[in-house]
Length: 114
Image 1 (spheres, rainbow, N blue to C red):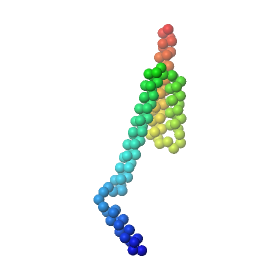
Image 2: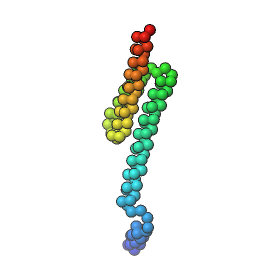
Image 3: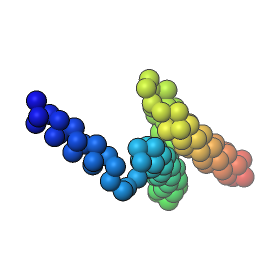
Image 4: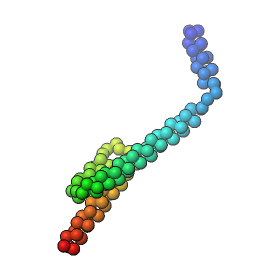
């Protein structure tokens, strides 16, 4: 019985030690989660841009870009995916589609000029 009382007193004393409050720790936790999410979205966008550059540099295949865009759209609709990540995937898909249209337009124009 007395051991339990000692443990309670130690816990109360430890809770009164200087340091961040529970609320401050929760806020810091949320800030870190937001930062991690922002970094994930930046990484996603950069990888999509890098894919565009890689594809364009090696004679981009319009069908491949379209396939990558469709994969982005499919992944964006996965159940349980956080909304900001889904939005990032959607944006990457749109960028890939836009690049495919741009390349196809250039191909069509060069055919017309021949």
